[in-house]
Image (cartoon, rainbow, N blue to C red; front, side, top):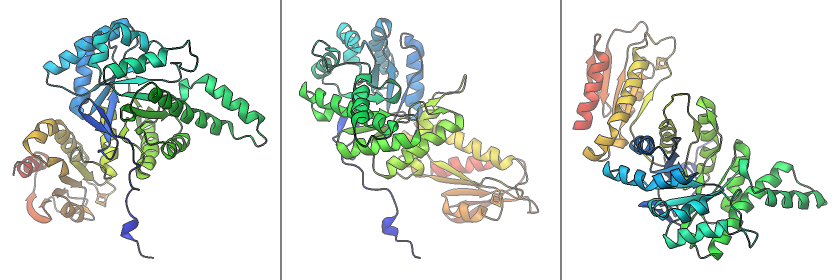
Length: 408
Ligand code: SF4
């Protein structure tokens, strides 16, 4: 069987209406945007500035912050100013639930400082004429020319809508699975709210939709449905993804499949940080997902073999890790100094079996000596053997060669 190369690669991107969030473009064929969310108390101005700055430095292109009470809403303009003083212009998105309409109405400086408002249709009503919460937020967004994300969530789904669909399903001659009805409620909640926002005068190019679920198969089904029934810009994310490898695997599986199908204009990897863990991890995972799938390049990634019985020491793992960390730390500076540096490929390999071959495919690669091999580490630059490193300083010497390569 031959492989038809025309069939390789992702499906064409689902055509969506382009939305501007601050100076970031979402949807309509724009590069897929990586975003994240703080976990600081937004009323803690300094703490929130520090975390937004760290997320932005890690590459988060938009950052969402919780706006849950008066003190948080009052802090938002100060956070925006504090970030501006540090030269950080990353758009801030306000995450509103329940009383967002009041907070935005009572804090116009907050409404102005935010680049987008997230509305949860599960806890902000609009169906009853007496209930103006949703309309109030849309009116404020319209007045300030701000986009909104209408974000349905499995954990806070519109109960009235769900009950209605469940009742209709129960009365149907061929009732559907309960999960399927819940998925339909998610999609309808997002679409009905978007239609209502448009009725209230919000243009389509200021609406982003999301419908987050915590189970991978449900998430894929919900977003496929959402994409097939609308052309609103789409924010992808697996909610409550979990800690450590579980959160990364589940998010990558779900988002990877949807992105391959052309669905998704902006992503967030919602990881539960380990106690004391680094919040920027979710940005890194989001970038690596897009980069390994070939959608975008953010940072040179180090290709490294897994190591095996032929690996003689931990030097090679340590070298691979230290090179990757070093590159990531330097990227904010390198990006401005060396345009295109993110395209660089580096390989760190454990022995002669795959080492020289893989290293030749990289811009710069090293093949460390495996068991029974002479204690020498050939370095390959642009596919050709460049030098052989020896002795205890191999790691430092290779790092210096990587810096020289980038510098040139
Ligand atoms: Fe093992 Fe060598 Fe393959 Fe690395 S390159 S996994 S050390 S055989």
